[in-house]
Amino acid sequence: MKMTKQILLLLIMPLLLMSCSVSPERINYGSDACSYCSMTIVDQQHAAQYVTKKGKAFKFDSIECMMNSLKETDSAKIELFLVNGFDKPGKLIDGTKATYLISKNITSPMGEFLSAFESEETAGVVKTEQTGELFTWLEIKERFTIK
Image 1 (tube, rainbow, N blue to C red):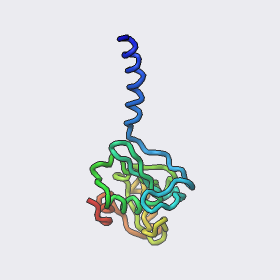
Image 2: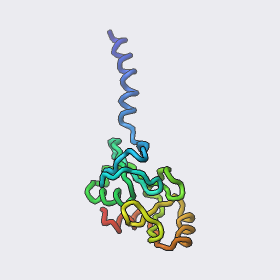
Image 3: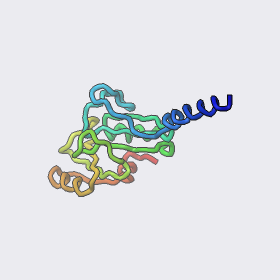
Image 4: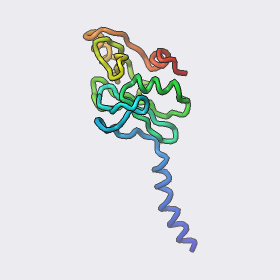
């Protein structure tokens, strides 16, 4: 009887640990809907996602939708802020470390002209080519008035 409980415990523990993992979910472009505006997520250069500390992922068709959603969300409950790199379509990068560009020459799904880059250097090159203004994560949060 004691051995059965131990075996059962060994089988259940990995499942419990896996169910509590905090990681991004794959964005299914063309079928997943934005958690904020309900539009279908199709743009691989501007999509975003945040994951709560409990592991629930919220997907967005644009960085601006994620930022607007954060106005209504307790940021302290979020573990991961992820954005697609403009120069690396479909690749989620750490939103808190990204460099952001607002350029009227680069349209984004919701019309804020907001793009993200993993590298400040790459963002600077694109800014030179397209014009615009660079921002850090904290500056973008301030621009969208998120606490």
